Length: 371
Ligand code: ZN
Image: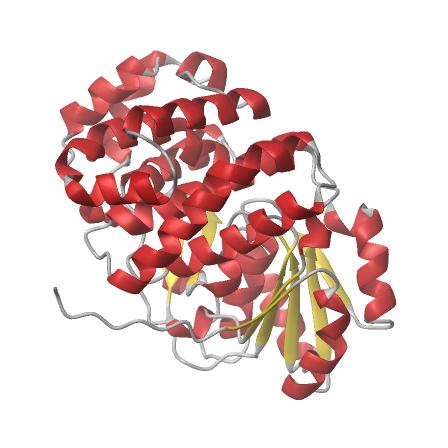
């Protein structure tokens, strides 16, 4: 067995009603909290519950989907100028990733997060402490040291990474997901499934992360269908929230592979939401990688209660159809002429984690099958 180190520095509080503990947790970290949310969230009924629990807390609600370097810079300026000493990010990956990056930028010397995202500047270790409160069961950002950011100026979308991006505390309350529409449930759930699968098959895989990955995938395969069909099924929602956090913990050290590498050009150029972009190549990736995984793939499939890779592929396809996700380039509104460009742009460094080496012609062939 190779040398490995496991850790998950984020404290996790989990359960129905967990958000009632937010004032106490925030008070242990700072005296001037700032709530961060995306624009759409503050219009939903669940926002009223957050405000009831944290009355009078200032709010930054300018986070857009696929957060830009500009929104990180704007949030960091607010944190700095108003001397906030703890941030509470409520939302999906966009709100959490934006707040995580801004909490670092707010205390460093860098003028813009672009210096890290495009310029390769180090992130530093200082940050305003951050509490992450996911309202979807997908990204796992509440326990990872990554923030996926978008830079419209440089047309670059991809993650930044650094220990300072780990939230200090994750408060995971499945009740926050009861009002998610079917499509969002499926999209975010398939992102979590991608994290479990990719963390497991990554070249950086390690035993404890494997355990988390198998359990996360098992729960998603068992409960995502029901969570999508019956949004207030408490058992299915709790299983999905737990699975998404587990999947985050499962890939945060091994990191993702080809599915996420391919997702970046699909999101940047063709505006597929992150989970849709990941789900788009997931079946092809399973079919491509499974043959080289040998007994490890057999163990994974047994662990999640499936017979073979084809059964997993069929389940992914069924879930995509249940959520109304695109299964072909045509359905995604992507013209076949751009296949060579898509293939070229899919070579994000995460591709190097793929268990089976992927060539440009392999990718072209994959996208032709998906046309
Ligand atoms: Zn993802």
